Image (cartoon, rainbow, N blue to C red):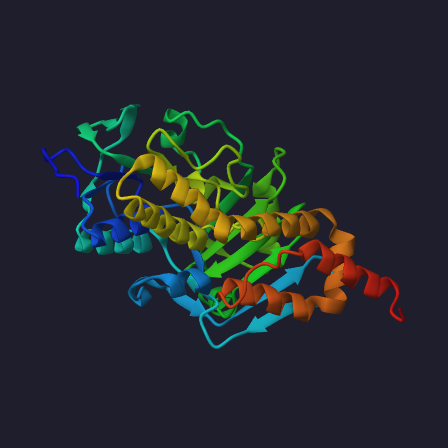
Length: 387
C-alpha cells in the first residue's frame, strides 16, 4: 500500500455521502485503503428521493439494513390512466423497501466508518488541482489524494471540475412528503403504486413511509411542465381528502449514462453523477450501490494505478450494468412514447410484463438483449392471432 505521509493525505477521496459513495468507501476501507468521504453538509441530512429500494439492490448489500427500512412490500401495483386493468405482482421477498434517505444514507456511512473510512462533514469541494496526486481544495482546507470518486449526485460539481460536458438526459421530478388523515393513510399504506400517464410521458408514485406518504411525479420529457398541477390531480386520483402537511422538493434524475466516459484525470464517476438510474422507473439507488462497489473493486484490482483503475472500471460497467441500462432505455422509449401500442400490449400481456419486470427488480433476471425483437413479436401476435 502507498504510505500516508500526512493526516490530510489519503489514497482515495469519495465526494458525497449518498449510497454510491458510502458503498465505494466501505469496500475500499475494508481492504485497508485509506479513504476519506467529503460531505458538504452535516449527517444525517434530508435527501430528495422517493426512497424506494428494489430488492436487487438490497440483496447485494454486505450487511442487513432492516433497522432503517420504514416499510417493505412483497407486492406492487401499476395503474394506467383510462385502463381498467391493474397490473399486480406478489413475491416472497420485499420487492420494494421504503427508506428515508437521511436515515439510510447515514446508516451506510456509519458502516463505511466502521470499516475504517474517515468522514469529513461540512467540507464543500471548491476546486481541484489536478496532477499525479490531485489536491482537493475544500471549505475547510486542502486534501491530497491518489484517486477521486465523484459520488456527488445528479448535479456533480466534481464532474464539472474534471471537465465532463453534460451528455446525460436529465428529467424533471417533483416529490412531496405528505401527511394525510389516519383514514387515508390506513387505506394508502397498504400498497406501493405506480400510476402511468398521470403526467404526459411519465408516471406518478405513492410510496408509504413510516407515518406519511412520499408522493411523486416525473416526466421523461425534458420540456418545461407544470408538475405541480399534475401532482394536484394525483391527489384527487388517490382520493386524498385532507392534506395535513406537505413539503415539496423538485429535483432532476439522470436517466441515461454519460456518453464521454466515466474516468478522467484520476476521477471515477458513480451513481447519478455517472447517470446510472434505471430509464424505465428512474430508480437510482440500486445501480448507485452497484456502481460504488464496481469502482472500489476497480481501484483495488488496479493497486491504486489511476489509468488502470479507469480501464478496469469501464470493463466492469460494460459487462452487465451498461448493457442493462441501454436495453432499459429502449424499453423506456417504447413505454412512454407509444402509449396506445403499449396499452394494447399490456391488455393482453400485462401479467407477463409485470412479472418479467419484477424478476428484474428483485434480481432474478436481467433486461434481455433482444427486447425490440420480443416486443415486435408480441405486436405481430396481437395483429395476427391465427398466424
